[in-house]
Image (cartoon, rainbow, N blue to C red; front, side, top):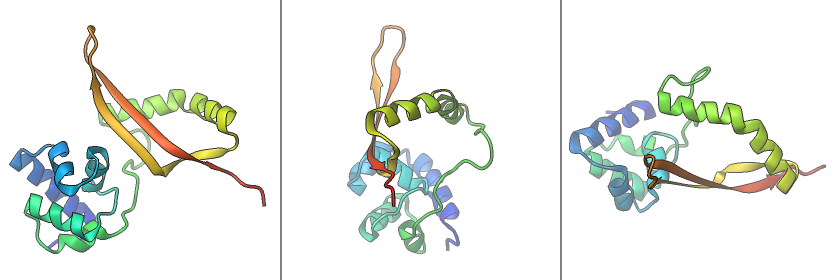
Length: 149
């Protein structure tokens, strides 16, 4: 019996490793992108009931996981300062270094507003390079202007 979304997430991570499943295959079963599905399996998105039932079957979870998979989660996974994981730290570092420039460029192009993280798309892929393969991340978020009132 699961008593929290964190317990369900931990069970998913353990089962994925135990079963040797990869995120792309899981996403195909769920019917969503690998990026969204991975985020949802790690507790950051809400599954529909049908998607949650698929996840329960894929990971051999107890049926008590269903309401947790369908509940709106607390979003954001960093507690306090910079994350300790080196890969996540580099993203934090990129945002710390390039964030102000990105903000300026977005405002210059679109005006005063934000890029949505709700109406958002992301793709992760590999880019061949003679000096060593590169990670290619493409993000696209709807622009939401601030409106005077």
